[in-house]
Amino acid sequence: MSGAATSKESAAFCADLVRTHDFARYASTLFLPQIQRRALLSVYAFNVEISRVREQVSQPLPGEMRLQWWTDMLEGAGHGGVEGNPVAAELLQTIGEFHLPIELLSRLIEEHQFDLYNDPMPSMAALEGYVTDTSAALFSLGARIAGQPSAVIDHLARHAGLAQGMAHVIAALPLDAARRQLFLPLQLLQQHGSGMEEVFSGKQTPRARAAIDQLVGEVRKHLLTAFELLIHVPPQARPVFLPLALIHRDLKRMSRADFDPFVPQATSRLRTLWTLWRASRTREFGG
Image (cartoon, rainbow, N blue to C red; front, side, top):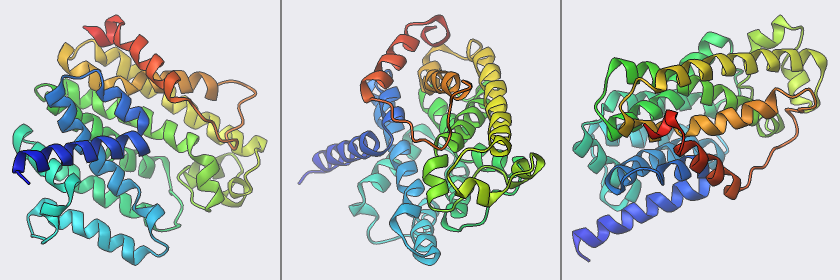
């Protein structure tokens, strides 16, 4: 099999992986030119591999070993299986073509080590650090692929990532509570007289809801700042930030009085595509 055919298969593998496990990000890449889209899908596929380690292991040690494999791969430590790993192959190609900073990818791996253990997220500062090195890093890497890096883009990526990451913490509450994992900051819960067991019960209480509402307020602040910054970045980089439209949609639901954060919410793929398509035609994203 030729190198070109293998490369094409690796790209298709990454696209399928992201489409299956992270459809919102997959759909957002449809609004980018093909070269940038393929590169961004390799980064998103890498993120899928890292963020799903927790689901694939029953003990922390095997998870640590999987994450270490990716860390070694990025550092060039060498593994015989790198050539046979389509995500690694695509990612390495993207890093070379777009001069992506290895440290952003390495820190993303480091932060996801937290996922392997059942320690609670201790504070808002800890959550902000986690989200900055995960969700915000993905926006930053995407913007580097779509356009030239700049201080404004990095500022936008941070606020976009904070909005997206915190919104995800709220959206993932039903699943996380079921497996007794707490990404909602413990300090925030305690400020409102709540705690871990109240969240793990999977039932809404006024105290837990007050803490969640405060986090919703943080999402709203970061999203507003992100939209204010978006018009100041080059038009070619703006499609990378299309997921902000999905956060804006979800924020409306989370802000309603009848919203129950412990009831799983399903969004159809068609609605996701429709939301992104409508946003792509607005002045904010269209340039």
